[in-house]
Length: 400
Image (tube, rainbow, N blue to C red; front, side):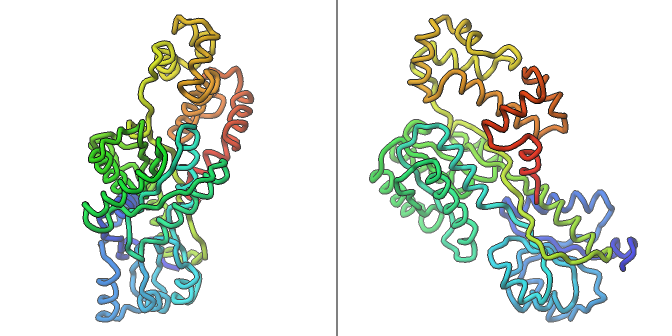
């Protein structure tokens, strides 16, 4: 078994990619390195690593650990023979990697199926879309596995919700901007509006926004656009701020680094795939509906959004709007697609979810802060509306 002192002498190789996944994962891994004073961290890619192995012929005594995208069988075989601790990124070909590596292999990835499911659940819940499009941001075969999983899960979940139409898969960021725009705009002419667009990532979503602008398609009334990754600078600088699915790539990087450290300390090499699920949808203007045309409904929507939860009920909404209860309930349902009580429950659950994910507060404290008379009452409603217990929901958003 390696001693702790040996770990400080080890080289840690992290991915050198510039995409959001790599940069956030790298930041998470580096945060662990800083906490443990591990200075020997280097960035590399598959090609450079393969050259290093050919030239230096690293043996089993080498103090080296790798977290990276590795696809070349020759390099996986070299790692397997050398016994160097390895965590692979991605999960598209685990069986092939295991054969090339020659033993148990550890893989870290985002949960692409859960991302597609969350997108479908969120967009379907709005209850207003006649058609759906998936904006696919990569024609590169190397990347097709993850975007295909998001698409397939998105379609399957819409089917479960009762949607029977075709979900068009439109290429974005694959060829010239002119050609991509033409493909997308031709697709929107073939289907009914309003249209919900689920883009494979935020960069593809930003392109969709620009294409809609060319065709004078209003966002979000004609077309709603949802991305993935929540690249905050990109999302908030877009002409129409982008709604996006947030994923804890940073936390996955920390998990990968801790796994590598255990291997360096002599721990077992476990055959496992660790998936990082999406956290939640960060809602911005690209999917938020415009203010309702009825002034009383608009006032009700605003009140539900801003009122203290411990004072929020149907009668409080009616009083704040100055309309009769029967009129308000009828118009509210017609304009929003849900009842006032449903809207209150949705707001409550969103606040509860945020507290469960962003704090370590107990369910009892959260119940008190969100206006529930008891923790059991909160738990009962949470399970009824989400299908999960509060503890299951918290656990489902952790890398597993």
